[in-house]
Amino acid sequence: MDQKLKVGILGATGMVGQRFISLLEDHPWFEVVTVAASPRSAGKTYEEAVGDRWKMTTPMPEAVKNLVVLNVNEVEKVAATVDFMFSAVDMTKEEIKAIEEAYAKTETPVVSNNSAHRWTPDVPMVVPEINADHFEVIKDQKKRLGTTRGFIAVKPNCSIQSYAPCLAAWKEFGPKEVVATTYQAISGAGKTFKDWPEMVENIIPFIGGEEEKSEQEPLRVLGKVENGEIVKAELPKITCQCIRVPVLNGHTAAVFVNFEKKPTKEQLIEKLVNFKGFPQEAGLPSAPKHFIRYMEEENRPQVQLDVDYENGMGVSIGRLREDSMFDFKFVGLSHNTIRGAAGGAVLCAEALTAKGYIAKK
Ligand SMILES: NC(=O)c1ccc[n+]([C@@H]2O[C@H](COP(=O)([O-])OP(=O)(O)OC[C@H]3O[C@@H](n4cnc5c(N)ncnc54)[C@H](OP(=O)(O)O)[C@@H]3O)[C@@H](O)[C@H]2O)c1
Figure (cartoon, rainbow, N blue to C red):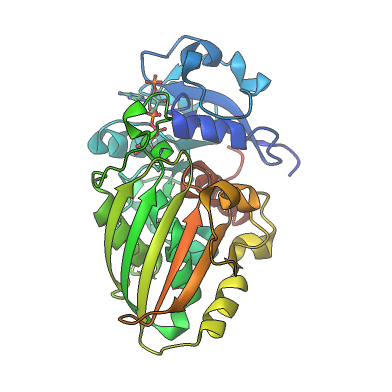
């Protein structure tokens, strides 16, 4: 790319916003020129606004420290500074829906980490290895919004990334019933142990709204485009329990699956390790070389050892074995704020750029 695309981050001061900032440091295609957050932060430098809330293990990049934080609500002013936006604001669902559409209507593409538009029929919800073809609904969305280059694209919830890629890789065997339990890290709630000490040595058996997302969102990702809308897949039926556990980063899933055509364990592993999609074919900068790895050791994947596989963009699977009630069971692990949040959105933006949906204004 001759000239980097100028990008802004809505919600730049939060946990996911900070992850965007650190992932985009030295990005070959994108340069962060604008940071926006609530009116509480607006007018301060990024360094002042974040203060002691910096939660990344790497230092705050020098290039953003002195950027003056803009107010997310001043849409025209913020949009004028960038070619496209990432969205990671924490507002009400209705407010997020409205503000992301307002940005799109300024002819600024929005790649969002938020759930607000995940079920808007003409908004693609994409894991680029699985359903980059869903971006084709953007042309219908633009017609609805009356835009020529502005649109919204989203990525799915962090909880599904530890098992939904397997369901996609195993499509030809017809996964029909899935029972999953997710063990979810506290960074998924925007927290560290410092700001959530109650989570030390604790388990909380409830994460608001998460079970519905974990059951339904894989079906939309596995769905197809029909008449300008995404139509969700009917199978597999998924039931899920989501548990908060004392882990900083990394969502683990323990999963049981029944298939229409029962495969062998070897066939399943072969499909996992060879699964790839548009990011690998196009050589996108953030694409993991191997999206899914299979670990033979019976005590893997482990959060401490495996969460950073492929810079947090890969998925680790292990303990695949036949089950006494279901066909198979396995354990999956993915990084919730990288693959599951900011990294997944950056990969979507790279795919959108490679496909020509995002370009210089
Ligand atoms: N953490 C994860 O792993 C994860 C994964 C997937 C999705 N998400 C979703 O991503 C979003 C951000 O999550 P987070 O964990 O990064 O939250 P967070 O740490 O609480 O950050 C929230 C961000 O939104 C801004 N904000 C809050 N209220 C606002 C308002 N009324 N107007 C404008 N900006 C406002 C904050 O700005 P100030 O600093 O100025 O308050 C901050 O930049 C949420 O919708 C969350 O559900 C999170």
